Image 1: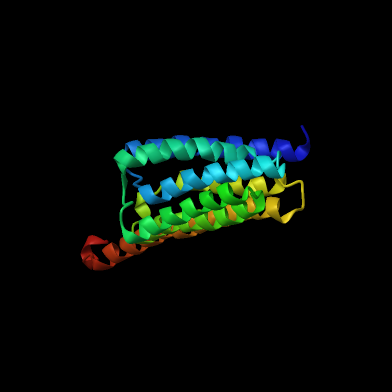
Image 2: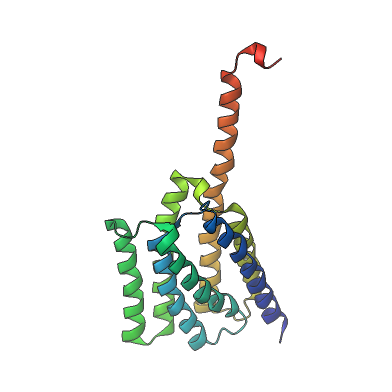
Amino acid sequence: MNVHQIIGLTAAVICSTAALPYFISIIKRETVLNRASWFVWLAVGGVTFSSYLVSGARATIFLPALYLVTNAIFFIMSLKYGEGGLSKFDLSCVAIAMFALLVWWITRRSDYANYVSLMAEFIGFLPTYKKIWQRPETESYLAWGIATFAQFLNLFAIEQRRAVIIVDPVSIFLDYFIVMLLLSRKYTLSGKKRRTTIAKKPLDSLS
């Protein structure tokens, strides 16, 4: 096992630790899963994993394998602890994921499947982006923070400078980074709320 593979495996291990706080936050109903997002990610996870196998990306394949398993678990959980999935917007996301799978099945080209699946994965993030923007408290900052760090670390596991291999870990890192930017509103809004509450208190209550 070379250095790149060790880094990739380490990233996968770190990312797997994010599943525990995320699972706990779901059980506590602090996190509300979007069903459309998790169904899209499950479908795309299968395409991405297959694409990695065909393209020969062995050092960075640990995370895609992990995603396939965790996405299946969280999609099943979303059926009980989630929301959405039947709106026009959500169904459009699901349709794009199915298109990615169709391209993979028809062409048998790993590069086509990879690029289309990345587009579908980003579309899959949109329902969750929207939810976080409106209600940032419905996602776990800790879990997404751990996962985003793992994605960043996985960038250093890239050993073959080919577009089909580079584009996937970079794209996924950016998807996760956007989540972190949106989740930062949770603390921004909390800070504004506290300042507003203090400003509304009578002066004698502050003494």
